[in-house]
Amino acid sequence: MTHPRATEEFARLFAENRDRIFRYIRSLVPHRTDAEDVFQDSAVVLWREFDKFRPGAPFLPWALAIAFNQVRTHRHRRRQAKLFFGEGLLEKLAAESEKMGDELERRSQALLRCCEKLPPWDRDLVAIYYTRDSTVGAIAEEVGRPANTIYKALQRIRHTLRACIERRLAVEAR
Image (cartoon, rainbow, N blue to C red):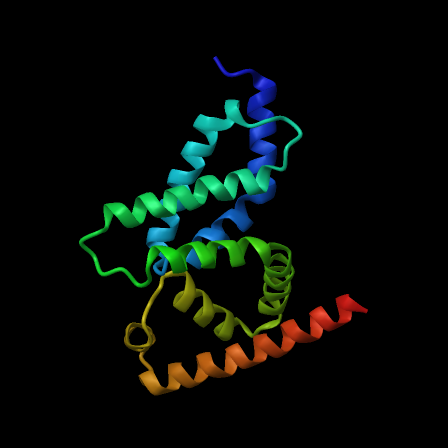
């Protein structure tokens, strides 16, 4: 039986790092639904292996190593599917993603704050496009607007968000 303190410690560490772990996986897995599956598999392995985690050691590097192995397992399971990049590139992307973790966290927080400032329609459009991994054509059909209109709106929103993020980061850097 797992000790309640270990359960609490795991829950705390996982909750503190879950977004960074998911973003790391998402940077290595092209499709969001696949990344969500890999994230769930990683969470199970992290919990199962938590008794091997050294108390006081940094949790995030340990968790990212497990997540990387789950990404590799996922890729091997889907071997018949077309792979988007080779194993060497996957390792380089993983190392770069891990190295940029703090910067990505700052940008992610800025993005969330900037999204809150968007008009409701823009916020909804971004949510539909990115959380559902939807296509511009599918969104256009769903909302009854031309695909070109949706494409241009997403382009404008991305530009607005990029500028907002850069402004926020510049203010924080001062």
